[in-house]
Amino acid sequence: MSDQGWIKLYRKIQTSFVWTNSDQLKLWLLILMKANHSQNKFLFNGKEITVSNGEFVTGVDTLAFEFNKGVKSVNRVAGRSLWRWVHKFEKAEMLSIKSTTQYSVISVSNWGEYQDTVKQVSSDGQATVKRLSTNKNDKNEENDKKKDKSKEPAVDYKKIVDYLNSETGHKYHTTDKTRGMIHARIAEGFTEHDFGMVIHYKSLEWKDNPDMQQYLRPKTLFSAEHFDDYTNEARAAASKQQRQDTSEPPVLTPEEGSARQADYMARLEKQYAKEGESNE
Image (tube, rainbow, N blue to C red; front, side, top):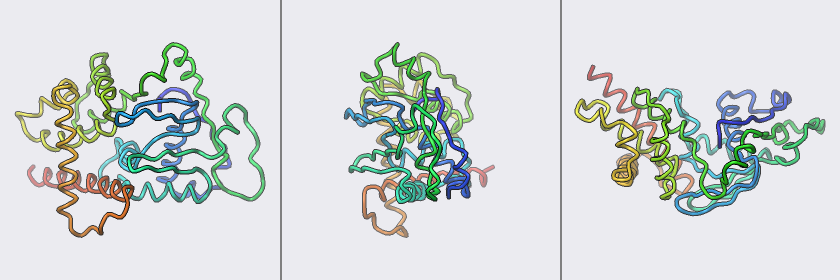
């Protein structure tokens, strides 16, 4: 997904059920903005994946990370709830989901029908949002002519740096050097979600330590020397927290497991926040 370009949104969305719930509306808009405007290829955990227009690859953790970016802990929505809403959209025929053990491909219904032209929404009484959008990323198409995106994954560098700043309170810029480090890690098979995990857990570990605060920076966190270790530490911390919480029911599916992990991440952040307030 790119920050450039734009999407079309029909006014009839006001008659759909997502309009009555601000978080569900936000999730639907996020899905529309993440959908590719044309066929594309990119790397996901070292594997090349091809998606068509109106499709994108995601998972519970990734969706939760992007949905809750910049949102205060008390207002964040657990990945489990977000994924339940995605299935609600599927039942309403707004989208379809194809899942593997590692990722899911979400396809927005009737995307191509409204990609190039604007048509009236039919008055057949179906108040769904499956016909309410299209992506016209003209700026992206111009960039495609300059750079062959099929040979490398699309990376939202600014989103990663903005999340680092929101977690640490810093004001780093998306410099060429920082983009280079992020691009190198993505090329090695890491994902944007891995960057979010590393930023989140290393911030919790170091932000209250005067000796370590200085290392909450791209140069340290995203370096080739440390990133693999930091990623594994973050995953281990999330798994440890999950094992310690015996109140949770057994994990039944990979998607439920990912949802629970996202939920644990949110709880862990709240816990650290409360501890920080009590120590002031």
